[in-house]
Image (tube, rainbow, N blue to C red; front, side, top):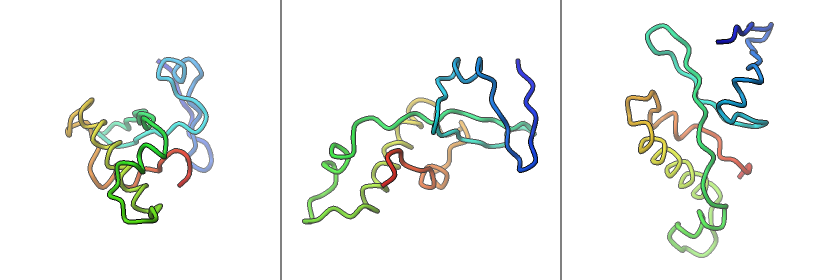
Length: 105
């Protein structure tokens, strides 16, 4: 168990031992929510596959719209999250849609 201090702008530093245990690295995405009066931080799994494979799942309409590619990547990410953790884990569809996609589409 580690103590974390909230800094001036609401920032915290997660202790190295905790980051290593959870596989949290630079640019990792964490899901934050309140459950029974506690702040919960959960690592969001990295997207599987690369952008071309994700784009390949979209219906072909000529050019690929980056917004459609991002939306599909986020949908797949949320689906995998629900498979691993279930709906009750705190991840809502709205939160899943708002999560950034790695690779900066």
